[in-house]
Image (tube, rainbow, N blue to C red; front, top):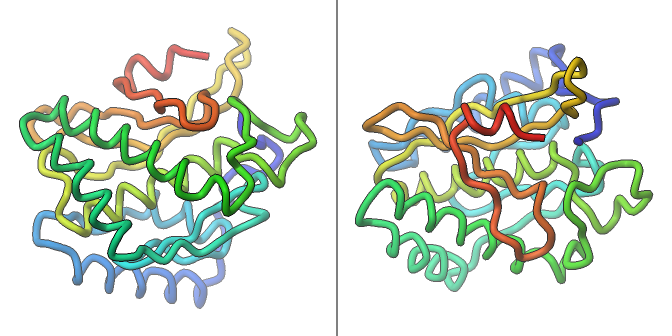
Length: 218
């Protein structure tokens, strides 16, 4: 369960929103032609916690539950080379690309773990663990994974997918806890696939499944 006390807020100041959307436009214009512009739902992931969306060179990494703690990841030439090699293994098919994206998220977990202290993180962490400084909640993971996927997209490393809008689930009638996830959309089939790290511990592969299946999980 994510931090349900702070859902993504709907109201933002016009000035802040205009500034962020301006950055979004610059990111989109700098990206390859196949990279889609960031949707309003994705942009809101960032405006809701007053951070900028990722660029082709850096991203804000959120942790500490609802981005209360944050760190800038400036991608080095070595980072880009490593991620390019990881994604190159997925060029054969859409399924292979999803498997490569899964490995890219593991790379991110390893890259940031020692810096943030999230190498001590646990699966399904939320405010009840009283260890915010070492953990991501599902909001943090959704933002971070979406940002990483947007960076891969801006580098032209996604051949079969585009970054989609984050998805939400939660049905108290069947005791399903609230949760959010990042999403990839298959170009050919339009099927939405989650890339969800929150249910997994440090360096464990994130869940990759259809949104249709994911919304039935707990």
